[in-house]
Amino acid sequence: MRINLLEIPNEGKSYVCNTQSGELNEVLKDLIGTIPHKAEFVIRPLQSGTYELTGFVQTQLPDQCSRCGLDFNLRVDEMFREMLIPQLDQPRNSSYAKANHFSDMKTDGPSVVEYQGHHFEMGEYIHEVVGLSQPYSAAPEVNALGDCSLCKISLKEKNFNYDEDFEAPVSPFAALKSIKIN
Image (cartoon, rainbow, N blue to C red; front, top):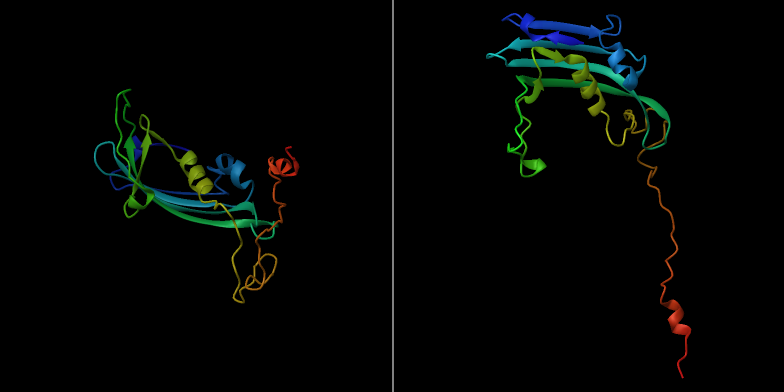
């Protein structure tokens, strides 16, 4: 879904994309297949060439439970707030500013996304929002009793850690102990 930013009126423009309208079906196919999705967002012009993008996407991602290994659909409900700015040239001798450490980064305000020309690839952006929402170790929600909502195993009583006993490696110098020197 490509949006022509020159067609955005001063009061902004709202978009609603879902499975029935089909704008994002092909773009999200590799992540969610035929699972229903819904995305709503607003683009507002700010200064010349700068736009504000706010909205949300709701869908489900097929995944495997990190506890029991069963397949399930992970709920995705992501909100986003971005500033769209024109892509700047990056000369060879340019320098960049970055946070010293991840904990120094502030996430209070909007983040920045660059666009080229006067078009913004909204489909690719939504694809990345959905893809980045997948956690490292996915697990279904816990019900009111403290049990897994997928396999119904009590999470308080079950230990999902994997332990394996390893034999201590034999030192290559162990054979020297049995050698007798006359």
